[in-house]
Image (cartoon, rainbow, N blue to C red; front, side):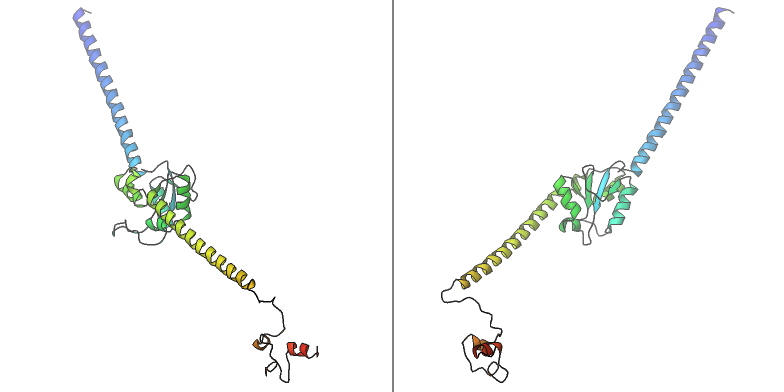
Length: 227
């Protein structure tokens, strides 16, 4: 075999190796693109995958919800969150990503809202779920945070409760003071059980037709020595 033939075969082998390598790279690239597309589709389908949410809803008008969007019940909200990959729980614990609720739940300061405030867990408007579904990703919840509003409402509720408790205490103290004052007035005697409640006995009268008639009351009978 002459040198020219060897060179030709070598070049042909090189071209074949290059073509094979390019084909392998193309296959890898196509596979990677397919995997990336699948992962993207999966993320879009489950944008809340891997997070735990506590849901709380109350009946009432959510003023921030567009009129075209319906109000969620508790069960509907849980199913909606789970359809996007989130896990839902009835307990508000430290692994909870956020407490998702409507405005009515904030206004009524539900137990989960109060626990979220106590544990410094974000409170997010339920409309955030709709936005995550619309965008196909976990949207930044900052525009949907209700924590500050919940704190303010909780503070007002606490002030109202303390004011009512103070009023009740003042009334109790006033009643107690009046009673003590009456007991300490000069000239008042200790109460006596007469066995009859007729007003004539307060004036020590014996002419009452009800107590001094044919059927005399126990007080008159005692005076007359009949009993």
